[in-house]
Image 1 (cartoon, each protein chain N blue to C red):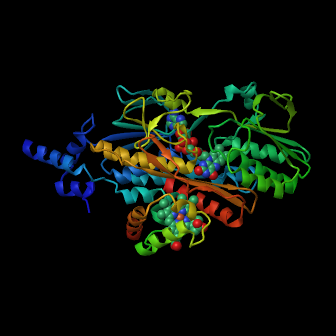
Image 2 (image 1 turned 60 degrees about the vertical axis):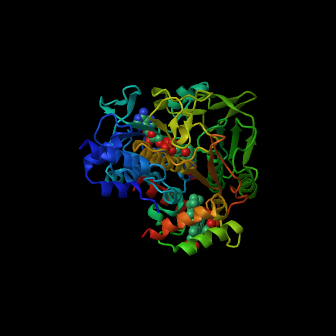
Length: 421
Length: 97
Ligand SMILES: Cc1cc2nc3c(=O)[nH]c(=O)nc-3n(C[C@H](O)[C@H](O)[C@H](O)COP(=O)(O)OP(=O)(O)OC[C@H]3O[C@@H](n4cnc5c(N)ncnc54)[C@H](O)[C@@H]3O)c2cc1C
């Protein structure tokens, strides 16, 4: 049995020695190493918690502008009328007990040479290592007329949970029976591959019960359903036959909030509710640090054993912002956060991170008010390919059932507790 | 004073070959908590893992992998890990209270 580092520090004694050992590695400042985590969503909050758990000598600052954590996972249930906003909304208060320095502010500048971040409130924080977890920016500028229609509350994406989630629910409630709900889906890669199809299922579930003459038109930029196709096809045929019209390779090009029209290359479609989700990219925060560096210029390339940027040293990126052949999910973001936290602890102590990390994903999707399914995969780091590779044991449920529906709820309760307490 | 520091630094370097602050078993197991709850203690329908006996844990994972034990999702997750990794994780979970 090897001695772990904490035991070693115990035998080697006092704080001064601790600081020196850590210091001989990368600490510029002397004293305890400083890690700043920006964004307290699924990735950032988890990373801050585990940095403190695994590196008790590390000073961890977590910067987030929002008062509360509002979960995207399960937000489709709110849109379908099965839960309310309170269910999605969680306090950050429990994170403080880990000794995380919580700062309610927004980062507006990063200087990787000086190793500082600056907030809107005018504060500057120095770091030895920086973790960026801003999630996505929704590119409303790529759809003609979007910004105006969005400002007038005529179109929403609700791809960040919050006021738009509640607004979309309200719009659905005021839609007349016989109305048309149009959903626009962006091309991959986007946040939560099965998310749009789960939303369509739960909107259909609501309409079937309360407004059965209504119609859902799905305008998908992708040629076909991107995730769990057998599951969603099963659900749409079994429960909502005749209600959903799916059109592949039909990217939304423009929206008109005055006329309530959604336009594709082929058609203008009159809508009662417009739920158009534009293309996305890594949060602007990543551009501030110069790490939005993949071939498309939209996502951040990282070294997968540490999630350190391939472009800028000492800057790590986790969650949706990462360029990878991995699904952009909350489950994935929390697991990336843990690999990143462990790697930072080792790097700050002058060691190499774990060489073969393993990472798992699961996305549960509800298909009705009583059924659900999932997709689950485990990925193992392959040093030759410099990528996470799925050895092939994973897969998706071809149909939904009540057991997965119940486990989806349990997953939500457990991951919220894991991230926030 | 200098000598002590050099010794400490050398000690740290020697340990660095195989010692991690976070052992592999714990790192692997941490990814299970999103479903099984923080510290392996679940809040709902998904079973808790904290305190499971190591032999029972390893057998469960092997049976999920082979299909001997029916599962809604664990047949997929179990296939992502080796027997040696089951043992590391089993050791870790057995010690969680
Ligand atoms: C409808 C829908 C359903 C989904 N369902 C599931 C599901 O069932 N399961 C699942 O695993 N995933 C699901 N997802 C995906 C999941 O929401 C994301 O993958 C996850 O939130 C990514 O985590 P993150 O940490 O990268 O970003 P986020 O969780 O979005 O966190 C980013 C945080 O960074 C903050 N931030 C941004 N910029 C700054 C700045 N400049 N300064 C300070 N803070 C900043 C933001 O305020 C935010 O709190 C779903 C998504 C949607 C839209």
